[in-house]
Length: 63
Image (cartoon, rainbow, N blue to C red):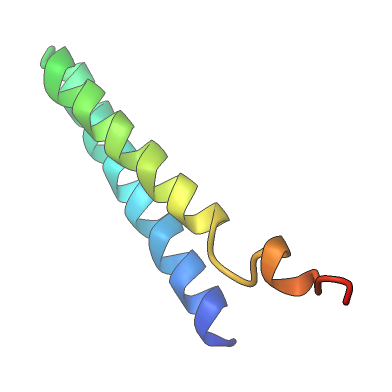
């Protein structure tokens, strides 16, 4: 497993942990905290999708 895969897995694991926390808070009736955890989970998923080479870095300009 290379470094980008490790980073992606770490972001996805963090996202899952936030979703579990959100579920627990929602079941307890604390909807504001649940919403915050959902937003944190979505941020981690966004970060996971951005790991790796970017398309713009792969395209070479024409001379």
